[in-house]
Image 1 (cartoon, one colour):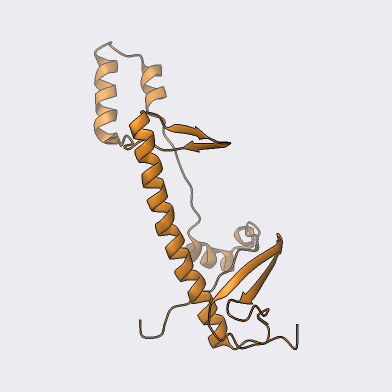
Image 2: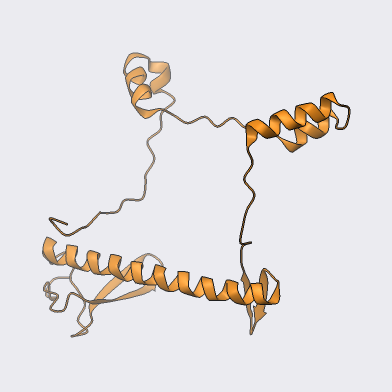
Length: 168
């Protein structure tokens, strides 16, 4: 993309996605295509910061819209609204949280009192085990044991840059 302007006068960009895997940035004032490969790091950082600010504004707008849509759902006592080809689904205002220790005790007492079967208690409170690799420990073990190293696979991950104003 040589020959394209590397300077972004306004710092504001218009984002275009002509294809799913193509992103083009245009200077908002001039309409010129931004040459990302030729732009300075400062300009790329300024664009990235502007996009982050725009995302914050969009998140705030989405929260405001969600609040209004939920207000209308509450008014209608529904969690789903239909309007001109749109189906808008909301969430209940509250969700249940359980004191698992107290619940386990209460269910055990109900089983002991003959008011509830053991099977019903098991269905109400299912044990779940979640294993999570401990990277630091596994790195050490992988260096010592080939069998542990053989269990590791490197996979690509999405990468993003964090941009914030210096001194902020």
